[in-house]
Amino acid sequence: MSDGREEPKTEPIWHFFFQKVSVFSSFSYLCGGIHILRSVKIKEIIDALEQFAPLPLQESYDNAGLQVGLTEVEASGALLCLDVTEEVVREAIEMDCNLIVSHHPLLFRGLKTVGDRTQVERVVRMAIQNDIAIYAAHTNLDNVEDGVNYKIAEKLGLVDVQMINPRKVRVSQGGHERVVQAGTGVMGYLLAPLDSLVFLERVKSAFGVECLMHNELLSRPVESVALCGGAGDFVLDDALRLEADAFLTGEMHYHQYFGHEQELQIAVLGHYQSEQYTTELFRSVIEERNAELPVYISRVVTNPIRYMY
Image (tube, rainbow, N blue to C red; front, side, top):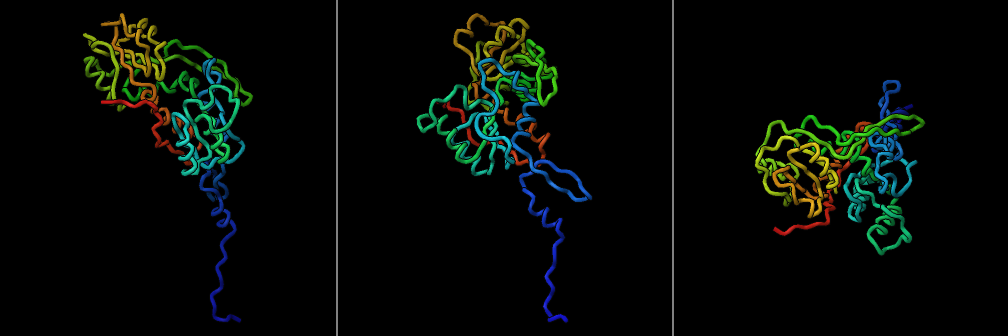
């Protein structure tokens, strides 16, 4: 006999399960018409990055790859940056991200101590204390096809982009071998020739730079552009060999500016500025394989250089 009170509603068990699935999951599948989310481990995100930019493509001096942390744990979110600083780690904590993906490795050399003496030591301690993994894709991402230099070319509006000094590299991943093309820098073409001053203004605008270093203005129009992000001045000789109208990079030594007047237009952005869009590349690679994982581009400007106007 009813006492007049409404019977409590019983939720189906599948509904309870669905509510408990982590919102930070990054893979989904259909099962019996129910949309169920599966969690993704940090190692799966790393696998995606290394499938795109295999570690064997990095230069001999480099230390790309896992820097700090464990990879078998579930990823709560990924924070993307150019450099890892204490402020970036704090941002990851605030965003509930237990993975930081950077372009520049935090660890270039081994640490003899892990304390508070240097920024690197402090970052390592903060990451470990907060269970945050740090991964870097550096020169392997520079050298791979569709990598950092292709992103720079895209921002500049270049077409017919080709690698400079392409080479084949055999890589092994997950028990499978494949051949990947790598190169140092790229060369492409503007859709239409530009006056050299207009070209430099386009560069300055596209990358939002505070100042742009360059040699004397070229008297002929600029159409072909060779480029290499970061400290890419070693590609200058290739740009000259290929008879490019312009050479664009992030850093160049003083004496390299000499002797090329009216040979090609040199433009130097700054290291950080030339590679600032690398985070967009990270995001597209990660989201292609892990569409539902929370992925954020860091708001921290890690460029240590300041400019007086």
